[in-house]
Length: 295
Image (cartoon, rainbow, N blue to C red; front, side, top):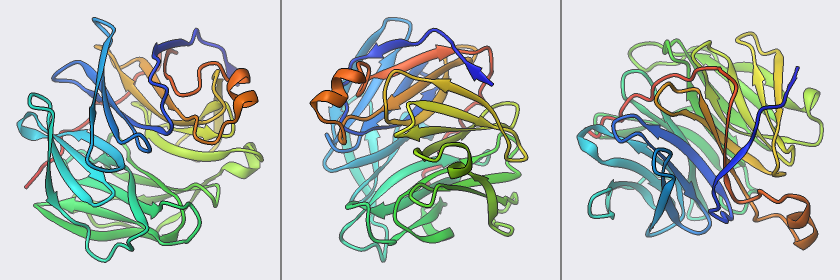
């Protein structure tokens, strides 16, 4: 079913590759990144104010963490960001990653573990894979040999975790145990069957355990039922939709990041909101984001 909510452009970020929106419940703000511009953005819906900090490298994601800091994934590893001083401090590297790779997307599960992926910065070699960060250590866990990873995305109950192979146009799922172990990784949704010309980007899971994905080259976001069936589609005024996040006081505002890096002048004319942070409301509630545990 196609849905047609009112779409607002809330931040004219002019992002090359906007990504990773995440709601910070303690501050009541949204964080998102522009990977290629090396920027970490904050947006406050109450005041409509926004600002950005320059990161010391390509920044794939930022997650609210215990202690009031943010845990961030940069090309060279994991960093801690202090919103008060706006400084980045390196925490650790990701061992074994090829020099041409970078970190791309992430989530926390209900226990505060951080799941993230790596990818080939040239978007070509199948050198990307997924990791889990817990108790100050990084463990390779999940699918591997993927050119562009996206997600992971944990279900609110913590019993499932989703992984996206963007160029393969597949979303995968695995059972997730309380101890962090994974069950069999199996297909969840074949995006090529529903959107032949689009690519699945960042996934998230709402409070009803439905999976949302941004559609790169698809000018839309799609919602899938827990059994992997397409149930809703929302058209958006930008061609390249990267990821969604639920936010606001009641977690019913849906934010969407967008990109411009693959658009020429004529594409920009046809996609007036490209590079902006978008927002809309469908009356569907998201799930609270668990704070990342740094150690």
